[in-house]
Length: 355
Image (cartoon, rainbow, N blue to C red; front, side):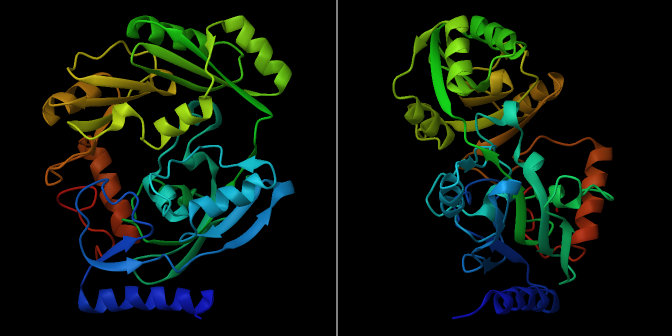
């Protein structure tokens, strides 16, 4: 059996070989998010064998693990100590790895109330495009010396390097959770979600779909019961299944049909003038849309509303899938890519058509 030191050397050697042969690498973990972004290219670099929890300090609320570690193992380990990944990452399949969760940067319903993936990444170890093994950050929140490079890896989809390890801050699981349901129009739901967000309620989820608004409350039994009585609504019996089905995209809304868009806008943004079927999350800040509207129309409207959009699932992955960037931001992103991966060896064209 290959130990982890040898595993790291093998991964690094694969990068060295790719640089020498000028054959790009397609970084693969569990493959649960291979549908996302443009079609992967290059020789496969499989990280599934790079597994294991390196350090876990329940009293310090920190866990460090190799990026090929299945997310299910990490979540099970945390649950045994009454803790959780507070950004509530979706898995989509049982094969989802820690590296994939960080690379794609997806967060669940708790995101507006506890933070995103990026907010919980404390440090990482990686191999850059010069085949150098680098470490950034640490295992404490106070480590803020210099630019927080480790958080650049979140959402980069493996285009900056090979993630080897990551350290994450974790949080205690809430004592009690309770979901209240309201039957409302979409405009009334957006208004109520905005109003509730301004209150001191222990919110952990605000979603709207099929004329029903769902309000999840998390905390101590006393605070949750008190809040539920104040906001009213009907109690949802099978709440765990509802939130899991939404997060894992198993609910009716996410069944395959037209293109599925993910649109991020300020939560109080009014209903957008786009045809199709909608699901609202994050108090209106994240909006899922199934539609046949053109990419140009959706990108333009998202920009007008001071937001951004990306085509989350589609059969045609050849065109641009992410919100076009202004020239200054595009230049900055190109410079970052060039600094980490000057030869363009990692996941080329996964996010953009020309780099």
